[in-house]
Length: 141
Ligand code: DQA
Image 1: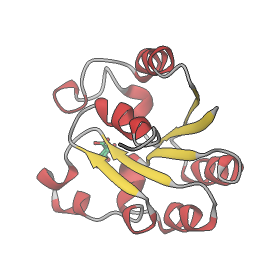
Image 2 (image 1 turned 45 degrees about the vertical axis):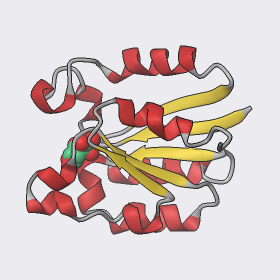
Image 3 (image 1 turned 135 degrees about the vertical axis):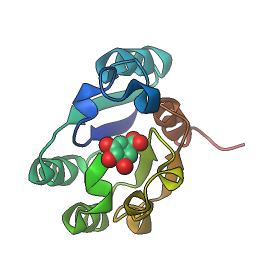
């Protein structure tokens, strides 16, 4: 079974309550259950933290075990050299996702310490970004 770890950064525990016009009305736990029942051939896990070092610990913990990581580092995307370095250090490919289109927002959201070390980037499709990212691990046409 393909093992995929979803790792979410700061404030994503508030999905459903937080700025719903930008991030939608659904909380991530409910969405994660939908992902699990849709992708029955995948072993999916979900970890969320508001703490930068904890996210680095989790990336290191799963990074030599899983087949891929889907990472929404949220605000740390734009600031964290440490998370960027952690992605470079591990074996698993990382798909960077964002719920919103960060390039249509403030200038400081146009910088990412994740993208240079990620396999790919999906943004602007709402929560569906996570489904699209998992699909990138399916066999190619
Ligand atoms: C986000 C975009 C980031 O700029 C922001 O800080 C977030 C969420 C997104 O998923 O659209 O917290 O990563």
